[in-house]
Image 1 (cartoon, rainbow, N blue to C red):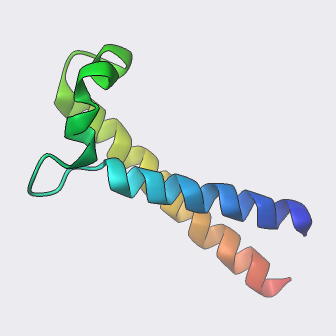
Image 2: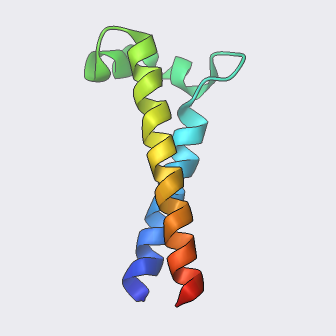
Image 3: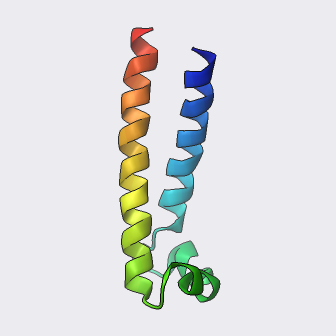
Length: 73
């Protein structure tokens, strides 16, 4: 049970970071780190945005599943 709570906390931080890194109508935080991040994730900024979006989606799904498991136990 304690492990699930720690996992829940880590996933929650991942969701928060993923949401903050996504660009909205303006450049957002991902525009501020675009120079260093594009060399790590690839040349195209669009590819980086897609990877961040997919990682945020996966983290959100894991967060929901973990929430349900914690609610049952």
